[in-house]
Length: 184
Length: 58
Image (cartoon, rainbow over all chains, first blue to last red; front, side, top):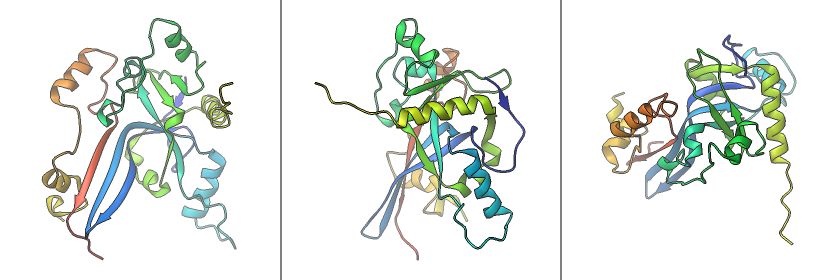
């Protein structure tokens, strides 16, 4: 897979950020507040780049327009998990979640690596990018605030090159649009 | 502001709560790193942080 390291100055599709927080809930009880969040080591931006570009123009370049209908409220991302941890089902153990094991040397592991499992997208990074071979878990997508990501410039690791990010986007769309049929 | 006194900071959460944060222990980090391809970053797995604030200021 190819990546780009130059920065566009805005959030863009295929960007990979580290240490991204997902707020699970904010609760208030008798004058106290509790915030629960999950910190993901790496996430990839899935929102379409044209949407991000239009949002950036209105948000930061202050283009005069009668409406702001191109502004987006949040950015869709999906976490990357270390594939070695995915094989043994322990990538979410710190959240108290035990995942199904995927045999590395048998068919399930091979299917994972050739992207035959709709839920996952396997990626290997070129030398110089300090991320181990990983899988994107499409089922765990979530949204983050646009300004929050914009402020995390120093945590931008790299950007997946256009052709590869379109592949990821296409597979994500297919996963979301799948139809679950009942057992007969 | 002193982070330990900022009710929304993680430092405050560590001081005021017993179940946060659930980061890997040193032992776990070492094991993951020795496994080679598993460890590449100190916090290689998602972890949860719970922040509890004793006072809400409006």
